[in-house]
Image (cartoon, chains in turn orange, cyan):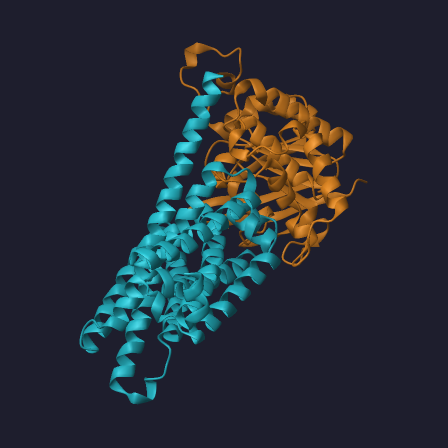
Length: 260
Length: 282
Protein backbone atom coordinates (compact mmCIF):
# COMPACT_ATOMS: atom_id res chain seq x y z
CA UNK A 1 0.00 0.00 0.00
CA UNK A 2 1.17 3.51 -0.82
CA UNK A 3 2.41 5.75 1.92
CA UNK A 4 -0.15 8.29 3.12
CA UNK A 5 1.19 11.84 3.03
CA UNK A 6 -1.77 13.66 4.54
CA UNK A 7 -4.40 12.19 6.83
CA UNK A 8 -7.27 14.45 7.81
CA UNK A 9 -9.24 12.73 10.49
CA UNK A 10 -12.75 13.99 11.25
CA UNK A 11 -11.87 17.65 11.27
CA UNK A 12 -14.43 20.31 12.11
CA UNK A 13 -13.87 24.02 12.27
CA UNK A 14 -16.11 26.96 13.02
CA UNK A 15 -15.55 30.69 13.11
CA UNK A 16 -17.55 32.63 15.66
CA UNK A 17 -20.92 32.26 14.00
CA UNK A 18 -20.40 29.93 11.17
CA UNK A 19 -19.51 26.31 10.89
CA UNK A 20 -17.14 26.16 7.90
CA UNK A 21 -15.93 22.58 8.00
CA UNK A 22 -17.83 19.64 9.33
CA UNK A 23 -16.41 16.23 9.94
CA UNK A 24 -13.93 16.22 7.10
CA UNK A 25 -12.16 13.00 6.44
CA UNK A 26 -9.53 12.78 3.75
CA UNK A 27 -6.33 10.97 3.07
CA UNK A 28 -3.85 11.72 0.34
CA UNK A 29 -1.57 8.92 -0.84
CA UNK A 30 1.98 9.59 -1.99
CA UNK A 31 2.17 10.62 -5.63
CA UNK A 32 -1.46 11.69 -5.86
CA UNK A 33 -2.63 14.76 -7.72
CA UNK A 34 -5.70 15.74 -5.76
CA UNK A 35 -8.01 18.56 -6.71
CA UNK A 36 -10.33 19.95 -4.05
CA UNK A 37 -13.10 21.94 -5.67
CA UNK A 38 -15.84 23.94 -4.12
CA UNK A 39 -17.57 27.28 -4.50
CA UNK A 40 -16.33 30.43 -2.79
CA UNK A 41 -16.90 30.24 0.93
CA UNK A 42 -16.93 26.47 0.99
CA UNK A 43 -14.16 26.24 3.55
CA UNK A 44 -11.30 25.57 1.14
CA UNK A 45 -9.05 28.26 2.55
CA UNK A 46 -9.79 27.17 6.09
CA UNK A 47 -8.84 23.63 5.21
CA UNK A 48 -5.55 24.84 3.75
CA UNK A 49 -4.81 26.99 6.78
CA UNK A 50 -5.38 23.93 8.95
CA UNK A 51 -3.02 21.90 6.79
CA UNK A 52 -0.34 24.57 7.05
CA UNK A 53 -0.88 24.82 10.79
CA UNK A 54 -1.91 28.46 10.52
CA UNK A 55 -5.10 27.44 12.31
CA UNK A 56 -5.52 24.76 14.94
CA UNK A 57 -8.22 22.14 14.44
CA UNK A 58 -11.05 22.44 16.93
CA UNK A 59 -12.06 18.84 16.49
CA UNK A 60 -10.34 15.89 14.94
CA UNK A 61 -6.69 15.61 14.00
CA UNK A 62 -4.33 15.99 11.08
CA UNK A 63 -1.34 13.80 10.34
CA UNK A 64 1.39 15.03 8.01
CA UNK A 65 3.81 12.33 6.87
CA UNK A 66 2.41 10.14 9.62
CA UNK A 67 3.07 12.66 12.36
CA UNK A 68 0.61 14.72 14.39
CA UNK A 69 0.58 18.22 12.91
CA UNK A 70 1.24 19.85 16.30
CA UNK A 71 4.52 17.96 16.52
CA UNK A 72 5.41 18.15 12.85
CA UNK A 73 8.70 19.99 12.28
CA UNK A 74 9.78 19.12 8.73
CA UNK A 75 7.95 22.00 7.11
CA UNK A 76 10.43 22.07 4.25
CA UNK A 77 8.71 18.89 3.02
CA UNK A 78 5.57 20.95 2.42
CA UNK A 79 5.60 23.52 -0.35
CA UNK A 80 2.86 26.12 -0.51
CA UNK A 81 1.76 28.36 -3.35
CA UNK A 82 -0.92 30.84 -2.36
CA UNK A 83 -3.33 32.88 -4.33
CA UNK A 84 -0.99 35.45 -5.80
CA UNK A 85 -3.13 38.46 -5.03
CA UNK A 86 -3.37 37.53 -1.39
CA UNK A 87 -0.10 38.14 0.23
CA UNK A 88 2.44 39.64 -2.07
CA UNK A 89 3.33 43.24 -2.80
CA UNK A 90 4.01 43.42 -6.53
CA UNK A 91 6.15 46.51 -6.12
CA UNK A 92 8.56 44.61 -3.92
CA UNK A 93 12.14 45.24 -5.01
CA UNK A 94 13.41 41.66 -5.22
CA UNK A 95 14.80 39.68 -8.12
CA UNK A 96 13.49 36.30 -9.18
CA UNK A 97 16.67 34.78 -7.75
CA UNK A 98 16.11 36.40 -4.35
CA UNK A 99 12.46 35.34 -4.22
CA UNK A 100 13.27 31.72 -5.03
CA UNK A 101 16.16 31.75 -2.56
CA UNK A 102 13.71 32.77 0.18
CA UNK A 103 12.14 29.34 -0.23
CA UNK A 104 15.21 27.89 1.48
CA UNK A 105 14.79 29.97 4.65
CA UNK A 106 13.28 27.23 6.77
CA UNK A 107 15.45 24.47 5.39
CA UNK A 108 18.69 26.34 6.08
CA UNK A 109 17.64 27.35 9.57
CA UNK A 110 18.61 30.37 11.65
CA UNK A 111 21.99 32.05 11.17
CA UNK A 112 22.84 29.96 8.11
CA UNK A 113 23.75 31.36 4.74
CA UNK A 114 23.37 30.15 1.17
CA UNK A 115 26.10 27.76 0.10
CA UNK A 116 27.25 26.89 -3.38
CA UNK A 117 24.98 23.85 -3.65
CA UNK A 118 22.02 25.93 -2.52
CA UNK A 119 22.68 28.33 -5.37
CA UNK A 120 22.70 25.34 -7.70
CA UNK A 121 19.32 24.27 -6.30
CA UNK A 122 17.89 27.72 -6.88
CA UNK A 123 18.97 27.62 -10.51
CA UNK A 124 17.46 24.15 -10.93
CA UNK A 125 14.16 25.23 -9.41
CA UNK A 126 13.97 28.28 -11.68
CA UNK A 127 14.87 26.09 -14.66
CA UNK A 128 12.15 23.58 -13.78
CA UNK A 129 9.50 26.26 -14.28
CA UNK A 130 11.20 27.51 -17.47
CA UNK A 131 12.04 30.91 -16.05
CA UNK A 132 15.86 30.94 -16.17
CA UNK A 133 16.03 33.91 -18.60
CA UNK A 134 14.25 36.01 -15.98
CA UNK A 135 16.59 35.19 -13.10
CA UNK A 136 17.75 38.76 -12.49
CA UNK A 137 14.49 40.54 -13.23
CA UNK A 138 12.51 42.18 -10.48
CA UNK A 139 9.49 40.08 -9.60
CA UNK A 140 7.14 43.01 -10.20
CA UNK A 141 8.17 43.20 -13.87
CA UNK A 142 6.75 39.76 -14.63
CA UNK A 143 3.23 38.87 -15.71
CA UNK A 144 0.83 37.18 -13.31
CA UNK A 145 1.45 33.75 -14.81
CA UNK A 146 5.22 34.20 -14.71
CA UNK A 147 5.07 35.34 -11.10
CA UNK A 148 3.09 32.28 -10.21
CA UNK A 149 5.76 30.09 -11.83
CA UNK A 150 8.35 31.82 -9.67
CA UNK A 151 6.30 31.06 -6.58
CA UNK A 152 6.19 27.43 -7.61
CA UNK A 153 9.97 27.52 -8.00
CA UNK A 154 10.21 29.03 -4.53
CA UNK A 155 8.16 26.15 -3.18
CA UNK A 156 10.20 23.59 -5.13
CA UNK A 157 13.61 24.80 -4.08
CA UNK A 158 13.45 23.01 -0.74
CA UNK A 159 12.58 19.73 -2.49
CA UNK A 160 9.11 19.36 -1.00
CA UNK A 161 7.28 16.06 -1.16
CA UNK A 162 3.90 17.72 -0.95
CA UNK A 163 2.93 20.87 -2.81
CA UNK A 164 -0.24 22.70 -1.75
CA UNK A 165 -1.62 25.20 -4.24
CA UNK A 166 -4.44 27.55 -3.29
CA UNK A 167 -6.20 28.82 -6.40
CA UNK A 168 -2.89 29.29 -8.16
CA UNK A 169 -4.37 30.48 -11.44
CA UNK A 170 -6.29 33.47 -10.09
CA UNK A 171 -4.92 36.45 -11.98
CA UNK A 172 -3.27 34.29 -14.62
CA UNK A 173 -4.54 34.95 -18.13
CA UNK A 174 -6.46 32.17 -19.78
CA UNK A 175 -3.79 31.51 -22.38
CA UNK A 176 -1.21 30.69 -19.74
CA UNK A 177 -3.48 28.65 -17.51
CA UNK A 178 -3.08 25.61 -19.73
CA UNK A 179 0.72 25.88 -19.69
CA UNK A 180 0.54 26.23 -15.97
CA UNK A 181 -1.42 23.01 -15.54
CA UNK A 182 0.90 21.20 -17.94
CA UNK A 183 3.76 22.20 -15.74
CA UNK A 184 1.98 20.95 -12.62
CA UNK A 185 1.32 17.63 -14.28
CA UNK A 186 4.98 17.39 -15.10
CA UNK A 187 5.95 18.01 -11.47
CA UNK A 188 3.58 15.27 -10.40
CA UNK A 189 4.60 12.69 -12.97
CA UNK A 190 8.31 13.32 -13.43
CA UNK A 191 9.29 14.52 -9.99
CA UNK A 192 6.76 12.41 -8.11
CA UNK A 193 5.61 15.37 -6.02
CA UNK A 194 2.24 14.91 -4.36
CA UNK A 195 -0.01 17.78 -5.35
CA UNK A 196 -3.01 19.25 -3.58
CA UNK A 197 -4.72 21.78 -5.78
CA UNK A 198 -7.56 23.86 -4.42
CA UNK A 199 -9.77 25.66 -6.89
CA UNK A 200 -13.25 26.99 -7.39
CA UNK A 201 -12.90 26.59 -11.10
CA UNK A 202 -14.31 23.23 -12.05
CA UNK A 203 -13.24 23.52 -15.67
CA UNK A 204 -9.66 23.58 -14.41
CA UNK A 205 -9.82 19.99 -13.27
CA UNK A 206 -8.86 18.36 -16.44
CA UNK A 207 -8.19 14.69 -16.89
CA UNK A 208 -4.79 15.33 -15.32
CA UNK A 209 -5.68 14.95 -11.68
CA UNK A 210 -5.73 11.53 -10.09
CA UNK A 211 -8.12 12.29 -7.24
CA UNK A 212 -10.96 14.72 -6.78
CA UNK A 213 -12.79 15.93 -3.70
CA UNK A 214 -15.67 18.35 -3.52
CA UNK A 215 -15.94 20.58 -0.54
CA UNK A 216 -18.83 22.59 0.74
CA UNK A 217 -18.61 22.48 4.49
CA UNK A 218 -18.79 18.71 4.16
CA UNK A 219 -16.41 16.82 1.99
CA UNK A 220 -18.75 15.25 -0.50
CA UNK A 221 -16.62 12.98 -2.49
CA UNK A 222 -13.17 11.68 -2.34
CA UNK A 223 -11.89 9.19 -4.81
CA UNK A 224 -9.98 8.46 -7.91
CA UNK A 225 -10.85 10.76 -10.76
CA UNK A 226 -12.09 7.96 -13.01
CA UNK A 227 -14.81 6.97 -10.60
CA UNK A 228 -15.48 10.60 -10.12
CA UNK A 229 -16.53 11.03 -13.75
CA UNK A 230 -19.52 8.82 -13.08
CA UNK A 231 -20.50 10.81 -10.05
CA UNK A 232 -19.82 14.19 -11.45
CA UNK A 233 -23.23 15.49 -12.29
CA UNK A 234 -25.04 14.43 -9.15
CA UNK A 235 -22.21 15.36 -6.95
CA UNK A 236 -21.56 18.80 -8.39
CA UNK A 237 -25.16 19.83 -8.36
CA UNK A 238 -25.20 18.88 -4.72
CA UNK A 239 -22.14 20.91 -3.91
CA UNK A 240 -22.96 23.94 -6.00
CA UNK A 241 -26.68 23.80 -5.51
CA UNK A 242 -27.63 23.71 -9.14
CA UNK A 243 -27.06 21.87 -12.34
CA UNK A 244 -23.45 21.24 -13.22
CA UNK A 245 -24.12 21.63 -16.93
CA UNK A 246 -24.25 25.33 -16.43
CA UNK A 247 -20.55 25.29 -15.81
CA UNK A 248 -19.31 23.22 -18.68
CA UNK A 249 -18.63 24.46 -22.16
CA UNK A 250 -21.63 22.79 -23.78
CA UNK A 251 -23.95 24.46 -21.35
CA UNK A 252 -27.58 24.92 -21.90
CA UNK A 253 -28.68 28.53 -21.80
CA UNK A 254 -32.21 27.75 -20.67
CA UNK A 255 -31.02 27.41 -17.12
CA UNK A 256 -29.72 30.96 -17.02
CA UNK A 257 -27.02 32.21 -14.67
CA UNK A 258 -23.62 30.80 -14.06
CA UNK A 259 -21.85 29.87 -10.95
CA UNK A 260 -18.85 32.17 -11.05
CA UNK B 1 35.28 71.70 8.20
CA UNK B 2 38.22 69.28 8.12
CA UNK B 3 40.22 71.55 10.40
CA UNK B 4 37.19 71.98 12.61
CA UNK B 5 36.77 68.23 12.77
CA UNK B 6 40.26 67.77 14.12
CA UNK B 7 39.88 70.59 16.55
CA UNK B 8 36.40 70.32 18.06
CA UNK B 9 35.11 67.22 19.80
CA UNK B 10 31.48 68.19 19.23
CA UNK B 11 32.09 68.18 15.47
CA UNK B 12 33.71 64.75 15.65
CA UNK B 13 30.77 63.45 17.65
CA UNK B 14 28.30 64.89 15.19
CA UNK B 15 30.19 63.59 12.16
CA UNK B 16 30.62 60.04 13.50
CA UNK B 17 27.04 59.87 14.76
CA UNK B 18 25.89 61.08 11.36
CA UNK B 19 27.90 58.34 9.64
CA UNK B 20 26.29 55.69 11.84
CA UNK B 21 22.76 57.03 11.47
CA UNK B 22 23.17 57.49 7.73
CA UNK B 23 23.86 53.77 7.54
CA UNK B 24 21.53 52.24 10.06
CA UNK B 25 18.37 54.32 9.54
CA UNK B 26 18.03 53.53 5.80
CA UNK B 27 19.09 49.92 6.44
CA UNK B 28 16.19 49.27 8.77
CA UNK B 29 14.12 51.68 6.69
CA UNK B 30 14.22 49.31 3.71
CA UNK B 31 12.38 46.67 5.71
CA UNK B 32 9.97 49.25 7.12
CA UNK B 33 9.08 50.62 3.69
CA UNK B 34 8.61 47.30 1.90
CA UNK B 35 6.43 46.08 4.75
CA UNK B 36 4.33 49.23 4.38
CA UNK B 37 5.03 50.23 7.95
CA UNK B 38 6.47 53.67 7.17
CA UNK B 39 4.12 55.41 9.56
CA UNK B 40 5.27 53.29 12.48
CA UNK B 41 8.49 55.29 12.48
CA UNK B 42 6.45 58.46 12.90
CA UNK B 43 4.36 57.03 15.69
CA UNK B 44 7.39 55.78 17.59
CA UNK B 45 9.30 59.02 17.19
CA UNK B 46 6.46 60.85 18.92
CA UNK B 47 6.49 58.32 21.72
CA UNK B 48 10.22 58.92 22.01
CA UNK B 49 9.41 62.60 22.44
CA UNK B 50 7.26 61.71 25.43
CA UNK B 51 10.20 59.81 26.93
CA UNK B 52 12.59 62.71 26.36
CA UNK B 53 10.12 65.16 27.87
CA UNK B 54 9.60 62.86 30.85
CA UNK B 55 13.34 62.69 31.37
CA UNK B 56 13.73 66.47 31.17
CA UNK B 57 10.86 66.86 33.61
CA UNK B 58 12.39 64.42 36.08
CA UNK B 59 15.75 66.14 35.79
CA UNK B 60 14.16 69.46 36.55
CA UNK B 61 12.17 68.28 39.56
CA UNK B 62 14.65 65.94 41.21
CA UNK B 63 18.35 66.52 41.07
CA UNK B 64 18.80 62.77 41.32
CA UNK B 65 17.82 62.53 37.66
CA UNK B 66 19.78 65.55 36.53
CA UNK B 67 22.63 63.46 35.18
CA UNK B 68 20.37 61.04 33.33
CA UNK B 69 20.81 61.08 29.57
CA UNK B 70 17.32 61.72 28.11
CA UNK B 71 18.17 59.20 25.40
CA UNK B 72 17.65 56.34 27.87
CA UNK B 73 14.06 57.20 28.72
CA UNK B 74 13.45 58.08 25.09
CA UNK B 75 14.58 54.61 24.09
CA UNK B 76 12.57 52.97 26.85
CA UNK B 77 9.42 54.81 25.73
CA UNK B 78 10.09 53.97 22.10
CA UNK B 79 10.45 50.27 22.90
CA UNK B 80 7.31 50.33 25.03
CA UNK B 81 5.49 52.13 22.25
CA UNK B 82 6.53 49.44 19.80
CA UNK B 83 5.16 46.76 22.11
CA UNK B 84 1.88 48.69 22.38
CA UNK B 85 1.65 48.93 18.61
CA UNK B 86 2.03 45.18 18.33
CA UNK B 87 -0.63 44.66 20.96
CA UNK B 88 -3.02 47.06 19.22
CA UNK B 89 -2.37 45.43 15.87
CA UNK B 90 -3.48 42.11 17.29
CA UNK B 91 -6.52 43.66 19.02
CA UNK B 92 -7.67 45.46 15.85
CA UNK B 93 -6.89 42.70 13.40
CA UNK B 94 -8.97 44.26 10.66
CA UNK B 95 -7.83 47.83 11.29
CA UNK B 96 -4.14 47.35 11.85
CA UNK B 97 -3.28 50.90 10.78
CA UNK B 98 -5.35 52.20 13.71
CA UNK B 99 -2.45 51.33 15.99
CA UNK B 100 -0.41 54.14 14.46
CA UNK B 101 -2.68 57.17 15.17
CA UNK B 102 -3.46 55.76 18.61
CA UNK B 103 0.19 55.54 19.56
CA UNK B 104 1.10 58.76 17.78
CA UNK B 105 -1.50 60.89 19.52
CA UNK B 106 -0.92 59.09 22.81
CA UNK B 107 2.77 59.91 22.50
CA UNK B 108 2.18 63.57 21.75
CA UNK B 109 -0.42 63.88 24.50
CA UNK B 110 1.91 62.43 27.09
CA UNK B 111 4.80 64.47 25.73
CA UNK B 112 2.86 67.73 25.98
CA UNK B 113 1.89 66.98 29.58
CA UNK B 114 5.49 66.36 30.56
CA UNK B 115 6.60 69.50 28.72
CA UNK B 116 4.07 71.62 30.57
CA UNK B 117 5.03 70.01 33.88
CA UNK B 118 8.64 70.88 33.14
CA UNK B 119 7.53 74.51 32.63
CA UNK B 120 7.36 74.57 28.88
CA UNK B 121 9.86 74.50 26.08
CA UNK B 122 13.53 75.01 26.64
CA UNK B 123 16.52 74.78 24.38
CA UNK B 124 17.18 71.18 25.38
CA UNK B 125 13.78 70.04 24.21
CA UNK B 126 14.09 72.13 21.10
CA UNK B 127 17.30 70.34 20.18
CA UNK B 128 15.53 67.00 20.45
CA UNK B 129 12.62 68.14 18.33
CA UNK B 130 14.68 69.39 15.43
CA UNK B 131 18.03 67.79 16.05
CA UNK B 132 21.14 69.55 17.14
CA UNK B 133 24.61 68.70 16.03
CA UNK B 134 26.34 70.59 18.79
CA UNK B 135 24.32 68.76 21.43
CA UNK B 136 25.71 65.30 20.58
CA UNK B 137 27.89 64.19 23.46
CA UNK B 138 30.53 61.46 23.59
CA UNK B 139 28.10 59.34 25.61
CA UNK B 140 25.43 59.82 22.92
CA UNK B 141 27.95 58.70 20.33
CA UNK B 142 28.83 55.57 22.29
CA UNK B 143 25.14 54.66 22.82
CA UNK B 144 24.42 55.18 19.15
CA UNK B 145 27.46 53.14 18.19
CA UNK B 146 26.28 50.20 20.32
CA UNK B 147 22.75 50.40 18.89
CA UNK B 148 24.05 50.57 15.33
CA UNK B 149 26.38 47.63 15.88
CA UNK B 150 23.54 45.54 17.34
CA UNK B 151 21.15 46.41 14.53
CA UNK B 152 23.66 45.65 11.78
CA UNK B 153 24.60 42.35 13.40
CA UNK B 154 20.95 41.29 13.85
CA UNK B 155 20.00 42.21 10.30
CA UNK B 156 23.01 40.30 9.00
CA UNK B 157 22.12 37.20 11.03
CA UNK B 158 18.38 37.33 10.41
CA UNK B 159 18.56 38.56 6.84
CA UNK B 160 16.76 35.67 5.16
CA UNK B 161 14.04 35.53 7.80
CA UNK B 162 13.50 39.29 7.60
CA UNK B 163 13.43 39.11 3.82
CA UNK B 164 10.83 36.36 3.79
CA UNK B 165 8.73 38.10 6.43
CA UNK B 166 8.83 41.34 4.44
CA UNK B 167 8.16 39.79 1.09
CA UNK B 168 5.35 37.49 2.05
CA UNK B 169 4.21 37.38 5.65
CA UNK B 170 1.67 34.63 5.09
CA UNK B 171 4.26 32.45 3.44
CA UNK B 172 6.74 33.13 6.20
CA UNK B 173 4.24 31.86 8.74
CA UNK B 174 3.23 28.90 6.59
CA UNK B 175 6.82 27.85 6.06
CA UNK B 176 7.26 27.34 9.77
CA UNK B 177 9.87 29.99 10.59
CA UNK B 178 9.58 31.81 13.91
CA UNK B 179 7.80 34.72 12.23
CA UNK B 180 6.49 36.21 15.47
CA UNK B 181 9.85 36.34 17.18
CA UNK B 182 11.58 37.74 14.11
CA UNK B 183 8.92 40.42 13.77
CA UNK B 184 9.28 41.26 17.46
CA UNK B 185 13.05 41.67 17.15
CA UNK B 186 12.48 43.80 14.07
CA UNK B 187 10.11 46.17 15.86
CA UNK B 188 12.54 46.50 18.77
CA UNK B 189 15.29 47.40 16.32
CA UNK B 190 13.05 50.04 14.75
CA UNK B 191 12.38 51.56 18.18
CA UNK B 192 16.09 51.69 19.02
CA UNK B 193 17.13 53.19 15.69
CA UNK B 194 14.50 55.90 16.03
CA UNK B 195 15.76 56.85 19.45
CA UNK B 196 19.33 56.88 18.14
CA UNK B 197 18.61 58.92 15.00
CA UNK B 198 16.70 61.61 16.80
CA UNK B 199 19.87 63.27 18.13
CA UNK B 200 20.92 64.32 14.63
CA UNK B 201 17.74 64.98 12.66
CA UNK B 202 15.31 65.48 15.50
CA UNK B 203 12.13 63.68 16.46
CA UNK B 204 10.04 65.39 13.82
CA UNK B 205 12.35 64.33 11.00
CA UNK B 206 13.48 60.86 12.09
CA UNK B 207 11.11 58.98 9.84
CA UNK B 208 12.36 60.87 6.80
CA UNK B 209 15.82 59.33 7.16
CA UNK B 210 14.25 55.88 7.22
CA UNK B 211 11.96 56.38 4.27
CA UNK B 212 13.29 58.98 1.80
CA UNK B 213 16.55 57.21 0.87
CA UNK B 214 14.58 53.97 0.46
CA UNK B 215 11.93 55.65 -1.66
CA UNK B 216 14.69 56.91 -3.97
CA UNK B 217 16.46 53.56 -4.02
CA UNK B 218 13.37 51.54 -4.95
CA UNK B 219 13.07 53.64 -8.12
CA UNK B 220 16.36 52.51 -9.54
CA UNK B 221 17.49 49.32 -7.80
CA UNK B 222 17.37 45.81 -9.18
CA UNK B 223 16.67 43.37 -6.41
CA UNK B 224 16.62 43.64 -2.66
CA UNK B 225 20.34 43.75 -1.90
CA UNK B 226 20.81 46.55 -4.38
CA UNK B 227 17.87 48.38 -2.79
CA UNK B 228 19.66 48.17 0.55
CA UNK B 229 22.93 49.33 -1.00
CA UNK B 230 21.46 52.41 -2.69
CA UNK B 231 19.37 53.27 0.38
CA UNK B 232 22.50 53.38 2.52
CA UNK B 233 24.39 55.30 -0.15
CA UNK B 234 21.64 57.93 -0.36
CA UNK B 235 21.33 57.99 3.43
CA UNK B 236 25.04 58.70 3.86
CA UNK B 237 25.03 61.28 1.08
CA UNK B 238 22.13 63.09 2.76
CA UNK B 239 23.60 63.04 6.25
CA UNK B 240 27.17 63.95 5.34
CA UNK B 241 26.15 66.46 2.69
CA UNK B 242 23.60 67.97 5.05
CA UNK B 243 26.08 68.26 7.92
CA UNK B 244 28.64 69.92 5.69
CA UNK B 245 26.27 72.37 4.05
CA UNK B 246 24.65 73.29 7.34
CA UNK B 247 28.11 73.87 8.86
CA UNK B 248 29.20 76.28 6.15
CA UNK B 249 25.88 78.03 5.59
CA UNK B 250 24.87 77.97 9.25
CA UNK B 251 21.57 76.19 8.59
CA UNK B 252 19.65 73.75 10.75
CA UNK B 253 21.37 70.36 10.10
CA UNK B 254 18.23 68.24 10.49
CA UNK B 255 16.32 70.21 7.91
CA UNK B 256 19.28 70.38 5.54
CA UNK B 257 19.78 66.61 5.71
CA UNK B 258 16.14 65.97 4.93
CA UNK B 259 16.11 68.46 2.05
CA UNK B 260 19.11 66.73 0.48
CA UNK B 261 17.28 63.40 0.80
CA UNK B 262 14.27 64.99 -0.93
CA UNK B 263 16.54 66.34 -3.68
CA UNK B 264 18.03 62.85 -4.23
CA UNK B 265 14.52 61.42 -4.42
CA UNK B 266 13.52 63.96 -7.07
CA UNK B 267 16.66 63.23 -9.09
CA UNK B 268 15.95 59.47 -9.07
CA UNK B 269 12.37 60.06 -10.18
CA UNK B 270 13.57 62.28 -13.05
CA UNK B 271 16.31 59.81 -13.90
CA UNK B 272 13.81 57.00 -14.26
CA UNK B 273 11.49 59.11 -16.40
CA UNK B 274 14.38 60.25 -18.56
CA UNK B 275 15.44 56.62 -19.01
CA UNK B 276 11.95 55.59 -20.06
CA UNK B 277 11.69 58.46 -22.55
CA UNK B 278 15.11 57.58 -23.94
CA UNK B 279 14.19 53.88 -24.23
CA UNK B 280 11.02 54.81 -26.11
CA UNK B 281 12.78 57.11 -28.56
CA UNK B 282 15.35 54.43 -29.38
